[in-house]
Image 1 (cartoon, rainbow, N blue to C red):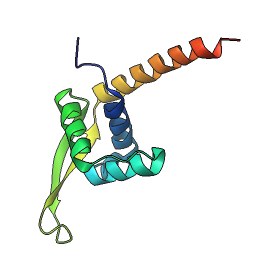
Image 2 (tube, rainbow, N blue to C red):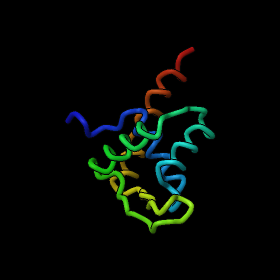
Image 3 (cartoon, rainbow, N blue to C red):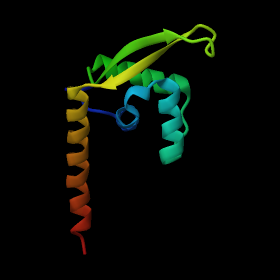
Image 4 (cartoon, helix red, strand yellow):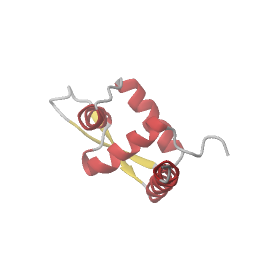
Length: 106
C-alpha cells in the first residue's frame, strides 16, 4: 500500500534518530545528517519527515522540559518504535538483495 514504505529521506532521518537514542530531536538529527553523510537538510524538511514517521508509527515523540538556553521553549524528542526498527530492517534486506544482483555481475 502506498505510503507504508520508507522514502530515502525518511530512512536516513529514522536511522539518525535511532542512532542518537535519547538525544534525538530535530536539530541533532539535522546535524547528524550533515556530519555523517554530508547531506544538508532544512529543519523544516527534517520535522516534516519526523511527522510522517510518527504518523506511520515508526517513531514516538515526547516533549521535554523548557530550558533557559532555548528561551523557555521545549524540545520534542523522538524514539524509534518496534515498527520503525522492522521498517529499517526491511529496507536493509531489500537493499542488500539488490546489491547482490550487482555484485554477482562479472
